[in-house]
Length: 281
Image (cartoon, rainbow, N blue to C red; front, side, top):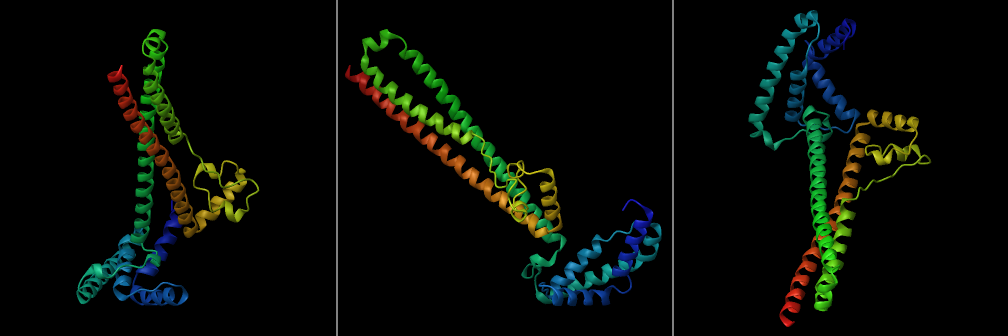
């Protein structure tokens, strides 16, 4: 909060929650989460979760710091000792984990890291595929141009008509390889939403630009508002976007693999045919 009144109000709330009555409110909060929702905690996971909450508390006003920071420090020390005792009792920290639905900062960071790493990997793989496709396009275009230039001289083909056989083989295989390399590098934009798409479907596919460019601004804003209000819907959108990125990558690499295979086979057959023509004439 930027304003003093809002800062004071926030400090007051944090002082009540993490102040002198912290231990009693902690037990009540655990019961509320378990009975009022689907969240289940063992003692160690809950103690560690509340310790992390205490460590994240920050008072904004001078009065808040003077009134509540001593109690906060005492609660942090108490909770730290409690976590250590439970840890010793269990034997090892890695035997217990905080449930994914606990809403802890660690769980949120894990989800963010997962999506960040996957998006980066998808982007890198797409860039690698495009670079390889550009190499194949350049090589085939140059070789096809050279062969066509050589064949344009009549003296060469009239003196040795058999030279046309390896040239035609390479022109066909090179052109095929070039076409599939272009298909691999060609942009692929998914489009799942339209102006007549129901609002329930619109809000499921709003991460990628191809899925919302056909929408009105009002439809887009309403869909984004729904996403920001629902964490699960936001994660579902990102998951769905990763899935379609993977589908596009799969098609890219299929075309690229076929392009390289055709080029390799066509080049090998061309060289063998040329050697046969050279040795038999």
